[in-house]
Image 1: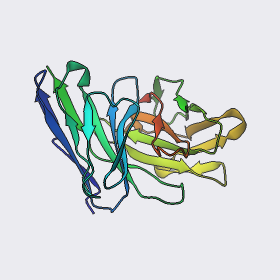
Image 2 (image 1 turned 90 degrees about the vertical axis):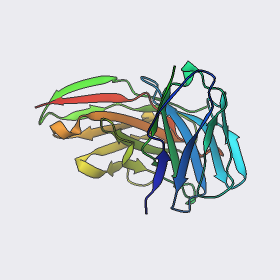
Image 3 (image 1 turned 135 degrees about the vertical axis):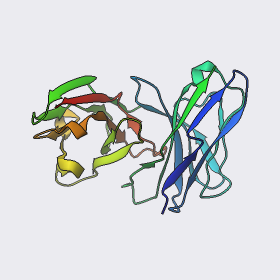
Length: 114
Length: 114
């Protein structure tokens, strides 16, 4: 198993540009989520999905869209990038296990918005 | 809402010193507790987790953590650190809410000097 994969690893955008961060997992996990990591703030939840076709907002959803058309993929879209979205983005997935679930993280995407 | 506090933001130790990193959470219900480690330039890796049972949990690389329910704490310990333990350490809580997301502390940067 490759686990959780993310592309690209690095990206530089100009303000106003759009892009999609890709996330895929091959573990047949129902639950997937996106976090952003900023210095001194730990990781904060952006959006999450409990299964194909179901998504919901997390702690910091503004400026981001998600969709979940398949179990494997959970892309994160920035419609109009802003410098405040400069961050490291991590995707995670987990399976349902009676409330005892462990989230596994991808390698991250480092995004710089100029 | 649940929250996690990590009181030590930056810790510097010499090799062979003992380590204890504090983690306190606020949530009134049943919690799942985690410690993740992020080595420089890498993604988050699970160190250990607590769901229920023995409050002393052993993880990888000689780390352990103790859940003290009365103190809402889940401190991470290691008797003798190595230079390779230099990393950032994150405490996280899952309060078994419908969101199933992790709430992270702000992280503790550990620097081990040879």
